[in-house]
Image 1 (cartoon, each protein chain N blue to C red):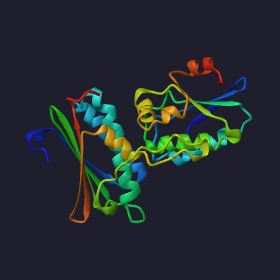
Image 2 (tube, chains in turn red, orange; image 1 turned 30 degrees about the vertical axis):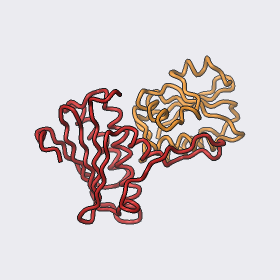
Image 3 (cartoon, helix red, strand yellow; image 1 turned 90 degrees about the horizontal axis):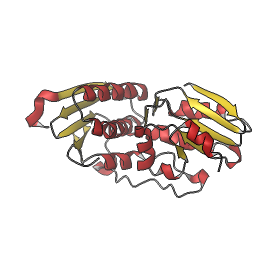
Length: 149
Length: 112
């Protein structure tokens, strides 16, 4: 996926359960920091990665037995690409959700308790690609380092 | 999941003793908050200074925790680390909650 920088690839896979995903996100965030992910991007990557993985657990494997989520990271000098692969159900209409901001100008009891995930991912990434292939989902999140934080 | 509670005057301070509020513990957090907030306190302040990470499920659980307070009381948040504050800002939930840099700031500000 990123032929120029194969030397800095990190792979991890774990079962698509909430507890395993939580531990996997912690492990991956620590490894990326150790591999030299710029500190200025660390928070953005943590947030977007957690949302993307939680979506797989919550939606792709909803109502079916959870299989493994495979994460492949490619850390280059100027960008990080994270590929998330699963064998769960496809995204609705085989496309990325728009992720509009959840409405917060609401009375207390009508405040949203969810629906924040894609809005966060879209704000924090430089590029997102989704592909349904071979009975699975492949999501690629790219973080460019030359942008202002 | 590790909450503790103290009363100072009419303010209840609930401290989170956990480094993550994420999808894996959002439901537990909401249930524990419900149990902790069955008090007549006029104001509830949630001390998040020990929380190193929050995801949107954890954010939703904090919103739910405010909605389940009886009498329409608000929930004020204190001690947000930069990454936690960022999740609130990007979802515009920083306009819903009063956020304080520290517990001291929250206590000095009072209920208004």
